[in-house]
Image (cartoon, rainbow, N blue to C red; front, side, top):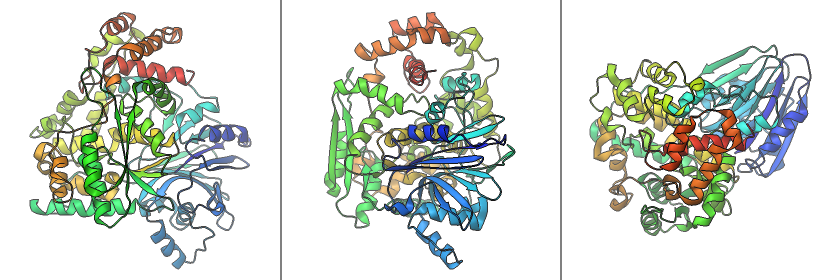
Length: 591
């Protein structure tokens, strides 16, 4: 897990080493263990290193292989790198390190851009070809590792975070009106390749991008789950076993490391099953971590009763982290500073503070993130059962979109009110794509490949990497995702959601955990704005910079500040917090 950055020029000018150095320095929290710059001619690459596999300096980056004429920077982990290394050695390749980065280099030389088809893991990388001058960028299938791009007529820059690109300057920081519409409509998600800023894009998941020295660019999507029946063709009774076998393999793959690996234990079924499978495999002295907050407005701020039960049941070395209220407000601003893009979920603060404590003990953790999207655990999925396929997009929009398009006129200033429902058009386009036989299949395909990438997954990556902590997500093993996509929808919706996963867990996870109500990372002080938190929101939305920006109607803002907790989005988010978070993020970035 690291941070990567770079630049390629199209105008015969040398790459701006100072700009790449600045971007790389801005990524220091993602890679606190070392850094490097490789430059020469029209391109330059930068790297910040978090040591996890091959802790020696032989694995330092940028990694140059003069024999192959390739230089690479890499963020993530290729879990099957040892198996690939054996295959490449059999083909005649010689290795100078024990790292997965060098496996990437050799694999690229052997298979070209098709190397990604051989990788099991999470990754964002750049490979520079010495002889052709081409730069190749790649991102993993589920977009677990981020990669942001800024391209003009004279150059392309890339980095692991959007703020790193901003640090180097020369970025169009105008608000993208389509991105703004998505943010306010599509559950605060701005789907790739857009971001909230006009001058920055993100490479979509499962995409390889080839950038030529003359500025030509070719993007190739190399993976897309179908969410259709038939492969595998299993009986109802066989599905739980198949799911459990796939998850067991996914969890074991993610133990590959030369440093200790812990588990983020919320006390829900997902993270508890990860602990159970590791305990089943004979792993000793498992380290687990849970976080909780003080109650507010009558809402509990922790689920320790469940995480304690799991830790006790499996005998883990468990650390319970209770966050005092006085730590929360400073953590809000710190979490916003760690965001590559504005993210509304209060979970961000929970993950930020949890990661701060966990990073003192381990460098790698497994997380249960992604199970709700993959196995239909959210409450907006049951209403889609039985909906005719030709009505699926409309039914999904009714239960997921934050507010109807017309209602945007209530909060946006007229000049920012779009003349088209961009978010609905985006949903319609996804739902009309081939595959995904039922309405629920189509919703899960969209959520798994888009919403999951740019909300929960990005949230975990940003908050853990703010503390140099690598988070691995076994529920997003692409082979497990493919299997889940083929699973009949009724098996996933059973037992109140995630039915097939609950059935797979019986006998491994305590029934108390399987049958408990669905939980989350609660941060009550943000869900129910009052006191110093409301003051912070008021300061942001009434700041002269916000007034000059002129995104939101003053009458709507005043009504929200007077009654901050009544108006909610379709899925229950605080409408004022959604707007304030965007403004706080923009101000934090100096925009």
